[in-house]
Length: 398
Image (cartoon, rainbow, N blue to C red; front, top):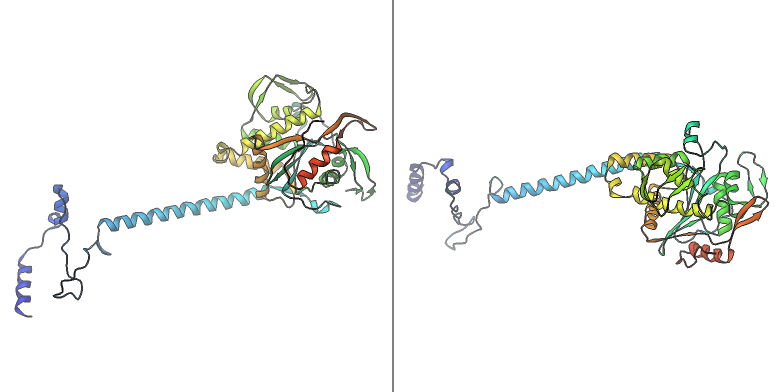
């Protein structure tokens, strides 16, 4: 070693190293001062040219602020990824659980002579008066009687498309043509006939009802959804009730309705009484249909509210009650169901149209008793607008 190196080494070894608590950075921190800036040193390979590199930031083994920021940022990134993965797992698990609850029992591929697929999406929503699942005591307390067989209590077409959402009620006593069909059990072929719309469901179930609606309206039905009395009550109770505002008191011994004027929360049994009430309405079934539209919109609005969606203790019972008792077509996906409910919510929020098929005579005398006769001039225009996803221009007035 040359003299310069020996002298330097001797001086370095003669100077005792500073203890950790007296290092320049720690001493400065303890005294509240500013730590000295790192000494600029020559870059590797430097010489007389005096080229200097940037001051050290701690390197891979340093403990400077750069290192601490890097670790924190990475930790936040890992936490965010973990949360996203957790949400995906929960969402996927919930999806498959909910999907397993859906009762896909209606086969629309069996429907004969269908009109061409239209623009937008058309749902046929049916409230049946099925007593399935009800005990004799429940039938009495709910004022639904103990009739057997299958009948509908309400029917409506919900149309969604680029020109808005329209909910059109179809009176169950509409006097229509029931096209020729083959009996489900007998296998016998029945000729076309004219009856109340409700008879199509009674004779051939959902598939014949869909065919009859399509035959008389020319509207292609994309999806079918049906709920009975028992499912209706359970769904409302799972939601904690539905809020309804009444302009006047409502009393009907036949349905069990007994409500004061004003806004109130109806439980499942009360809600069923409300949507079945008709004797206080001046136009009987037509007034009841307006109440049904109003209630279904309120129901969808409440089911899709943040207080339901963001509360798992409420959301899961609602999903279980709603999907477990809802009968739909075999091609109905959860996304289709979600779209249907949000469309109904939109109607209640004023972003859609609620109408009844145009009527020319609400007390039409037929061999089957009083029926509802459609105003076919206005009805054909309305049906064409819905089938072609055009802006609705026809009102419900006769």
